[in-house]
Image 1 (cartoon, rainbow, N blue to C red):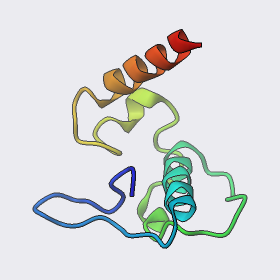
Image 2: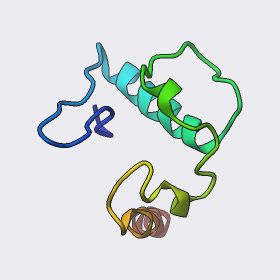
Image 3: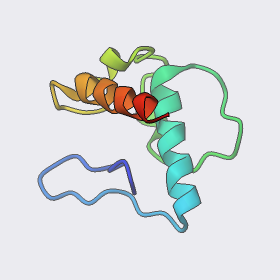
Image 4: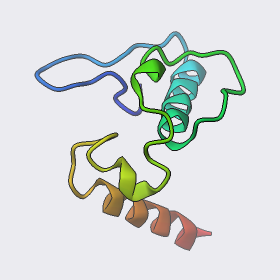
Length: 88
């Protein structure tokens, strides 16, 4: 569970997936739920998908306070993306 899907704090454990591929797919599906109202391209593996208000975070800045409670989440993601692009 690379993204902590299902972790809500207070010691609550996140979701567990059968394979790494399934966990990554769940992560991507969860992000898609936030970013879009489009249908999924594969079978649903993210059991928390239905709890997301579809399309509520079309920009990285919109994830702050929704995907993550960290008030600097969007800045951290932008910094990571910047470093990734610099490496190429």
